[in-house]
Length: 159
Image (tube, rainbow, N blue to C red):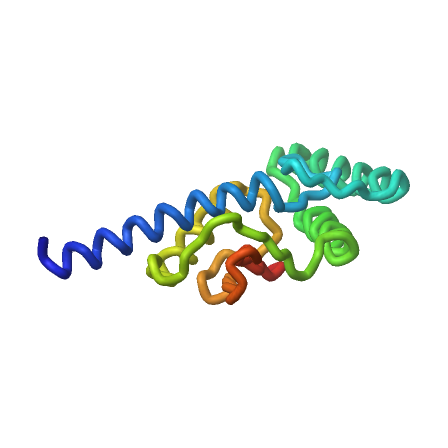
């Protein structure tokens, strides 16, 4: 087998492993808010009052998206959309951790092409459509320890 083929195979496998580890992170660690349409297994509940306010703003935006003016032209819902996004940002900053440490049971650094691995993790986070964390490989940090009994972990940064 040629050396280039082995390197390319390692890159592909590292990327695929990263994708599956990303799926593990989504399933095991990824937080979402109780007001989110898509939710992970780690739902953070917002208060009843915050949920009520969210529902009012969301309904206002949703209803405006179907309105038409006297000429039958669609009415812009940009103001309502911006208000909804501003409130979502407030909730995100209040409840979603700035960083997320995800302990991975088995991961050997020497066997991986780290950039491809991080790329796979990022694609998985992006594909789940519910991540609050950055997906760029440069934003995904992996920490290995000297202690064989201490698992490595991946740290994600909120976007």
